Length: 89
Image (cartoon, rainbow, N blue to C red; front, side, top):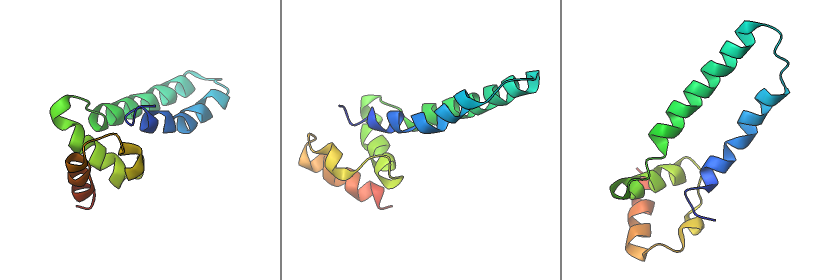
């Protein structure tokens, strides 16, 4: 599986807890809307997969624990070194 897909899949448990809630009032739906909007904003900002930004994105994901350095083994060693350096900042 591609390295950039793994962190997105790790979001699934936090989203699943909202499937277990019984929606009895309109405010419950709006609360879900607020949660999903916040997650969408977070994902849009974190996962910018345009080529020039991939090293920075991967470094952030490693720093936050969403990716492990060994999951990036298919990348060029110089790129992995840059990602490692940026993830320590």
